[in-house]
Length: 206
Image (cartoon, rainbow, N blue to C red):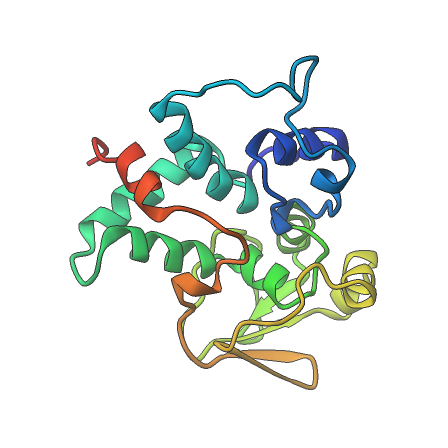
């Protein structure tokens, strides 16, 4: 599981990237200070093309709570899949991570919280406890929480103040059980990103 970040560092990450990432669970970061962190954060400065590309891939890394090595491994696997453009495969795969599913269902207020719920054994897939945050859900899977999961503070908080306004159409929920009726789409990503810049950043990865 990727190292968690403190509330303050999550705030700084969003300011440095110039965008609020739902997975970090901290809304209002840019409303409070709509510029980068640090002494000179409110001064405009020219950034290199490399830095622009890196900024885009960092959005994916921080939203999904991944280490760089984890993201690179996902990129390598996506490039081996020739059924579609590898960037599209990458995004679909990231959306299919179990921790992300828990977050997208509004069962956790942030990605770190979703990771915690999975690692603590509060999430079940087809009735079986899964404690691996990166577990890949499949079409037809049914995702639920244990009794402890539904009673957890994370679940209660997420239900009271959902971080996202809607649940992707690839999930249906009935009696607190979510069924995966289709694979997620790249368009389901809940923040703005430039996929071409991510593609350019990782073009050497094989």
